Each structure stands twice: as C-alpha cells, then as structure tokens.
Image (cartoon, rainbow over all chains, first blue to last red; front, side, top):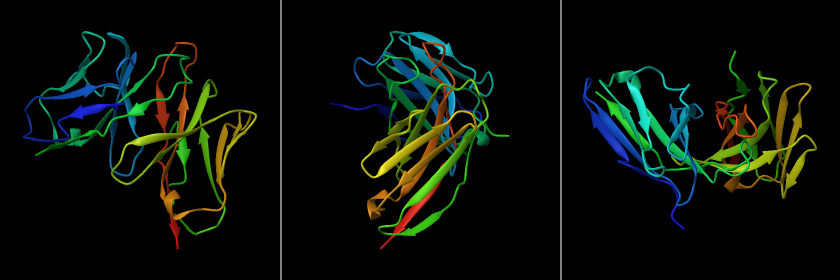
Length: 116
Length: 113
C-alpha cells in the first residue's frame, strides 16, 4: 500500500516568508509525528498527534513553528517568518497507534527546506 | 550531554567482516529501544527493536544493558548492501505516555568489496 507522503519535496523560500509543509500518513494510522533532520544528524523530534490531538509539542523550537491535524489524517507543519537556520529536511512519520512506545514509525521521504 | 550518543564513524570494513556499534543513553526512564537504518538520501527505516533479553534477526543481533544504559548492534558477515547509517533510537515513554523518539547522530558503515 501507499506509504507516508510529503509535499512539497523541495521548498526554497526567502527569509521572512511563511511556509506550510504537508504530510499524508499511511491510511488508518492514528499517530503522526514531525521531525527535523540536519545533515549528518539523526532526526530531531518536533511534535506528535494521536488522531487530531497534539500530544507533545515539546520539540518545536519556538513559537514560529506550529502544527495541526484537524481531521486526524493529513497534517500541516507551518513555519512563520522563516529564518536561514530553519533550513533542514523536515520528516513526517506515522504509526498505527497500537502498543504505545513499541510501535514502528514509518517515515516519509521528507521536505527539503532551504531558506535564502 | 546528548540523550543518545553514538560513535559517528565511519566504519570501513571488508565484506564478510563482523562489526559492532555501540550506543549509550542518558535517561534511565527510557522504556523502548530500537535500531533504525538510513540509506543515503533516504528516510530512516526500522531495522529492529531491542529487548533486554537480546534479540537476533538473521545476521543482526541487538543487545540492551539497562544497568549500564547501553545498547549494541552486531552485524555478522557484512554485505555491501549493509552500507548505510545506523541510528540508535530511544523512546522515553510507554503505555501512552509519549511516543517521542530520541535519535542518536547515527553511525556510518561502509562495507568495502
């Protein structure tokens, strides 16, 4: 079946612009996660949802970052007033929401964001 | 100190070699442990979960030592296709508390012909 999809795959924007990154999880997956990955580093947790409820947003760097999942399926990560330091690969993952802590998270291909 | 620490490598080994990766984690409350594999320019994928009793999947063996807060991955009879970055991953929560995965920086393995 279809895996996690993300769009756009690449986004180039100018400093100060807002960007919206979209994630479409595996059909039926209850939990959805956002990570940021810098070159040569592992993914860094940003936030996660169970259904439409945002369970943990402790990884969001500052209030310019927000995420929503209004209908418990597709999610959008929004970065306002982008800065050059926001440039990174943004990855989304989803899981079935079964035994919490043990379930496999399936990652999407990521959105490469470049802020000029 | 990082929550999950790994030797970044690279580990350059010949085909057929046995290679071991180590990882330490700082939060003793961590409940679940994993190894993920990430190929160049690809997304991370689960390689295997890690249990206290140790677990094996073909050529791969994972071990967890809770007392030392130490996780290992052993790869026997290395193949060219094993070349990738191996990410040590820890989940703090259990039973619905959180699904926050903490990733190490990854260890790069290059298997040479």
